[in-house]
Length: 285
Image 1 (cartoon, one colour):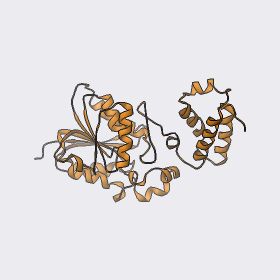
Image 2 (cartoon, helix red, strand yellow; image 1 turned 30 degrees about the vertical axis):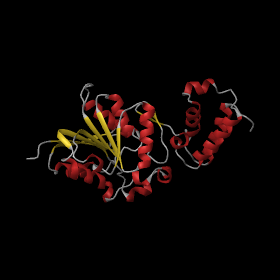
Image 3 (tube, helix red, strand yellow; image 1 turned 90 degrees about the horizontal axis):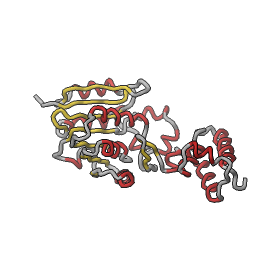
């Protein structure tokens, strides 16, 4: 096919994707991301021809999608809380459930002029930390990750979004020893190894394993956070975590029994699944 129109290119891609049982939305998403168009702009250009370089790039992109690679890694773009973030295989692709986590935190702290201290554990692409900073500019946001490659992505995103976040390398609280925070947030690895068989194959093949899976039925990192929580949460400070939909009851019981914890609650996501852990600290008696 010689330099097709955008419509013809999408038709070719859709047939190829269907033939390989791939993501039917991928061709349009790829094209809109590459051209920086919304759907209306795409429709306006339907009958125009692609340049040769655009057509060649589109064919390469679609072949990657046929192989199961997520669109966000193909175009290096992921939307989160109304903003565009750079992502690649060094970090997880931000999910809608994590947007809900951010929304809960913001709703719990609606005041715009509170200089709260915030810690994001396992920041990955930096999507949570950067979003919180941009939505609440007076907050002092620190973000940690054990992986230097993830921090590189997060710092790139912070630069692009013009968000001032203090990024530090280390596992859990290692990089913030002696410091306390009003809000601690984490979306740690929480998938149990025995759930690997029921997961989307593209997630298994392309997203970083160490950001997905955790020992102890996926509860390992929550317990590590819990053991050190009293040393890093201010009095009446809050911990917010995303977790797997079957982990709520165990997490609620675990955190309820920790010293320095006053209240624990489990909140549901928009699909009705237990998804968000909320913990409030209090004076240890």
